[in-house]
Length: 163
Ligand code: HEC
Image 1 (cartoon, helix red, strand yellow):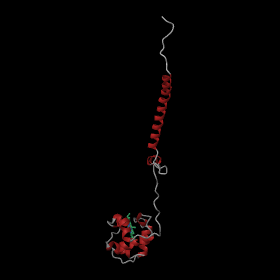
Image 2 (cartoon, rainbow, N blue to C red; image 1 turned 60 degrees about the vertical axis):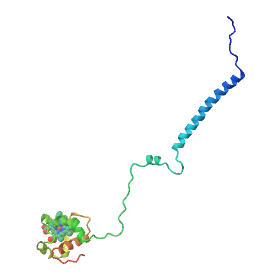
Image 3 (cartoon, rainbow, N blue to C red; image 1 turned 180 degrees about the vertical axis):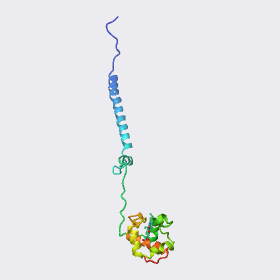
């Protein structure tokens, strides 16, 4: 047995290769990592920095938006009698509900017509007995009520001229 161990001789060439391998291998890994990270970033960045990313826009968009309806402008124009009667008055005056004088029933309207147009309009605006003020629709203007009274009464024997 010899005290001397028999190590293989390390040549200069082997040392150089070992050093190079030890340096180049981690360097390659770092370069690959950098390329990967840059690739991921490219996929997520918008092409044009000025153009907002649609996906981001959708994510940060408010849950709901309120659109305020345009306020009706210009002077109010009274609806014609026929329109008011069809929409409001005919609810009672078409069939004679609650004892309302029926449209076209000259007999029922004659004593009322004899009171005069102005009185009928005032009764329709303020209400009389079972007849509700403005036919129950406070949005109707005096002019619209007057139009409706003339329309109904004229269908029932009168010849009023709407105000
Ligand atoms: C809820 C039912 C009802 C509606 C809606 C209604 N009326 Fe009447 N109206 C009556 C009744 C009931 C009378 C009879 C009242 C009475 O003389 O006792 C009447 C009577 C009248 C008279 C006669 C008043 C008088 O002096 O004799 C006029 C005019 C009239 N209504 C106009 C209208 C007009 C215009 C509308 C629509 C804007 C309308 N009414 C909507 C129930 C209604």
